[in-house]
Length: 128
Image (tube, rainbow, N blue to C red):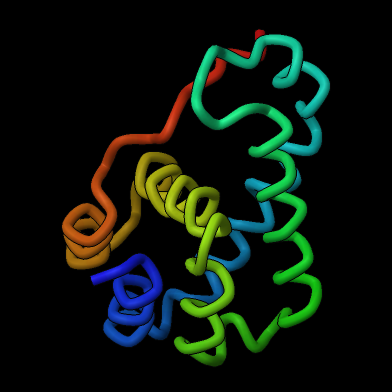
């Protein structure tokens, strides 16, 4: 399965959580934008450069702005636009961060995300 198919499966199995996931992705975008200057200053040597990362974030921002509520109303729109191509890098990062930050996350959702996308954050950058 590719990332779009995995996201469609996740969205189909857990349609009630899509709104929360989209809101979390928006929060992560805001968080990344808030610390963009600092993140760029301390960006590690990594195949994904800071310019790549913030370019992906900009693309995901555009998807969220364009599709808005359709992202959580339609599993197909959610998966096709947030988990297609390079957007999948940030979206998967957000899913895994969601699991690490949300203590009340249902076990089935946790297991599904771990099974489909893993549980390793792409990279951790200390902005302090």
